[in-house]
Image (tube, rainbow, N blue to C red):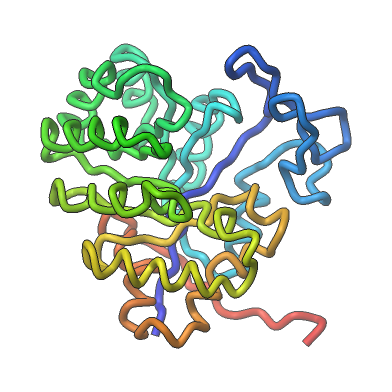
Length: 298
C-alpha cells in the first residue's frame, strides 16, 4: 500500500527568460504557454498555463489533486536562475517543498545556503568544464548538510568525474537525475554511481519524457526500474516527474500511476520508490493527508 507519494524532481519559475550557449530561451509572447528553445518553438508548459508563470500554487493544486504530499524543486539553466523565487517558496511552504538553489562558485553556494535553500542543483549535462572545478562547492555542501542534485549527460568521462566527487565527499547526499538517462548507453554506469557511496540515490525525473515514444503505461520504464533495482537495490531509487514539462503530454497523476498499476513491482517496492525513500533521503516529516477526490466525469 502506497501511503506517501513524494516527487523528487520538479521545476518552478516565475519568468523564463535567459541565455544558454548564446541562444535565447524565453516565453514567445504574452498569453502563450510556448517558449523559444534553442531557436525552436516548444510547448514548455501545458496550454492552459498561458501567462508563462510556473508557480508553486498551480503545482500545489496539481499535487493535491494527484495526492502527492511533497516535491523536490530542482533547477535547470534553460529556466534561468530562480533562487529568489524558490527562497520565497521554501519559506511559504516549508512542509511541501524542498527547494534547490543554483550556484556556480563557492560564494554563490554560500548565498544559497544563507537564503535557506536546502540543496543545489547542477544540470551537469549542460556543463562544459570538468565537475572537479566545482569541488569547493561540493565540499561546502557536504559540510553544511546540503543535498546535491546532479543530472549527467551520456559522457563517460563525466560519469567518472562524478564518481570521484562522491568518493571525495562521502557524507554528501547526492541525487542523480533523469534516472541515469535511462534510454541511453550511459544508463547502467550512471545508476552504478549509487554503489560509489552510501548517500547516493537515483531519481526518475524525466523518465516519461525519455520513454515518450512508447507512451503510457510505459512498460519499458517499469522494466528499467526493476533492472536498476537489481543493480543497486530498490532503496536507492526514487520517483520524480520533471513537472511541468512532462505534463504537456500526460497528466501529472499519469507520471506516477503507471507505477501504482503495474504488476511487475511489489506493493513494498512501489511504496519505497514513490515516497518512502525520498521521505528518508530529504527529511520530509509533516506530509498532509490528501484523500482521493472524485472527478465530475466519474
